[in-house]
Image 1 (tube, rainbow, N blue to C red):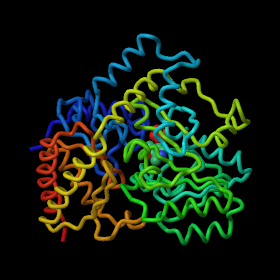
Image 2 (cartoon, helix red, strand yellow; image 1 turned 90 degrees about the vertical axis):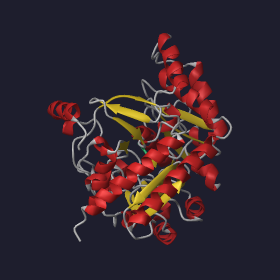
Image 3 (cartoon, protein in one colour; image 1 turned 180 degrees about the vertical axis):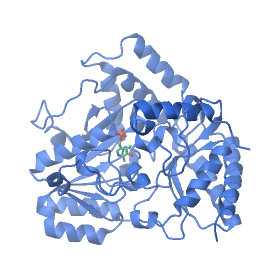
Image 4 (cartoon, protein in one colour; image 1 turned 120 degrees about the vertical axis):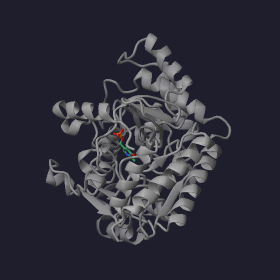
Length: 435
Ligand SMILES: *Cc1c(COP(=O)(O)O)cnc(C)c1O
């Protein structure tokens, strides 16, 4: 029996009349899995409720920010208290200093941080800064990594482009696209080779220190350290895009976890506590190139918005409590071990990747190390599995090429419910296999 999604379908047909594809971000469309996207009415804790009253256990968590689940009372209270004092002044506030201090204290390589409004903006600004400092144009990135929708970075990018099968995005000035060099993730030899040839023209190498936008692809041991080495030798800057990993895999992000410090760190998602935010930071020497101290210009009417700062402050306070990352680890391990048992019992080929509370289940027999191996997945099987999960009341990202996110507020019972739902969805999805 199929769950009633009439209201979502009705809204989707209206939405398509006034918004491109009916959505404000392509990743929300269900193109890769089939069916109409859900329209959400409300959410609380680990659950979201759609406009038809269906409730789902949520592993999207707004694509990463919601480590404490939806509408956490302390975050809601911080936002409403601030709202009563005004929502934006376009002037300096104490609350933005508080958040900056917390970021600086937690993230090893960051001494000075600039707030912006999205991860995209953080990355675009970081690239401009790197180009401004080095006087060089070229940028190196990795296939399947997503760094927001800035012009320089939409070549062979992950996330929505991977889900929709878009290798290169039209509309990007070719002379700019040519400055972006793409390499396979986890392949140190190719990095060294490229830098030997073109190192003196490279402004920066940008990397997701844990791949999160082609599904989760952890760095091989030594990969990040090698990147640090190669960039330093070439006089290029190393940029860690920690928009997903920052404050998720540890309080100090992936750089703390792996003990490798970049020159510039991009942050977003979690530090806004569910409100729109981004940030980029580095050493004082690097960040002093930014206006008004230096001449690399970057500005924002709503940057450091008090509502976002209040939410971010509360989020970081919650994260600083004892045992949070241990809790996330234990819950995520329990879920992924259960998922593995399910696929093993059913004889389905799948690979599991996980760092802390970010995880993926890939339907392939190939070891997952880069975008090529990720692309070997059976996306049809994923589509059936996804839709089966929805029917069973579990909401994951509508693409094989996206991470799952655990929150602190997912209960053990909800994890057990998820595993039972997954068992049923897997059984049904496999049953439809055309042998
Ligand atoms: C989400 C994401 C971005 C873009 O952030 P937006 O706030 O969506 O602009 C950039 N980099 C990474 C690694 C991300 O996951």
